[in-house]
Amino acid sequence: MATTYSGLYLEIRRELKYAGSIASDLAARELVCAASDKTKEALFRDGGLYVSADIEARARELLRRHLDGEPVAYIIGEWEFYGLTLAVSPSVLIPRPDTETLVDRAVDYLRECGPCRVLDLCTGCGCVGLAVAAQIPEAKVVLGDISDEALKLCSRNIWSNSFSGRVVPVQADALRKPDRRIGVFQCIVCNPPYIASGDIDGLDASVRDYEPRLALDGGPDGLDFYRSIAGKWRNALYPRGRIFFEVGAGQSVAVGRILRDNGFGEIESCEDRNGVRRVVTAIRYPDI
Ligand code: GLN
Image (cartoon, rainbow, N blue to C red):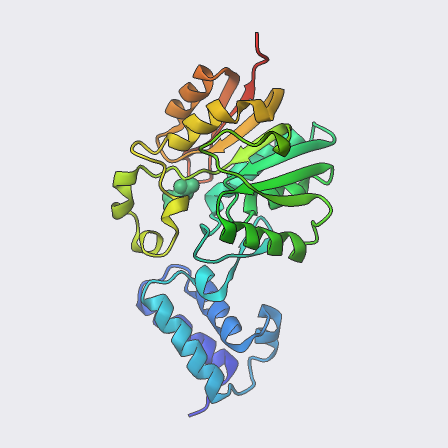
């Protein structure tokens, strides 16, 4: 029996709820939109129209993939972060609400800076750097990542969000010293891989089985990237330039210590919306 768009949406939502999905309304809406190539607005406008058999079959196939564990963001190929719609793929992490705290802190600082260059290192789909660019019109932003696939997504996201004049993608390996040509920055923002290698198997299956290990694995204690960046990327910051790191739960003290040992000071940390110490920031002290 033919169903309408709103009937299909409600049915998919019911199945998701039954399977224990916490954001069943959001997921159902995204899956029906993706299956029918409709925007959210069009979906609700067309709620009373009948759905073709093809679209219904496509929506059911997307629902099956999600019920098998595939994150909605990878199924639909985009996700929202800090008010921006960004292309994502299984070669980058899905932007998380926790990471908005990193943007909040960097933006508070950059509002006082005037024209500046900002580096988003380990940028993935570019979410942090693009959110900074959106909030700080005077900032020029470099999105750095080692992965070609991530850099392709960055290019798409720069273009689709109209930042072509101010934001550029650059290949950069956070575990090695930067190429001098990348220049010097007033601010580095960075959400590096920070899960200890041995903890990856214990992550939620939707993360462990679908998100890229390259973007999660922070080495034996999860801190490899902090050590490398604080040491090898120090000179990519101007003296008194500021770095903002996202950190995993329980890592803020260790990351503060790594920064101090590498000639950073004014070290502070702050909590995300769930009360986890999520951001550590410091300035690069001038060399003596
Ligand atoms: N916050 C992510 C998670 O816990 C990990 C992100 C990262 O390693 N940068 O799944």
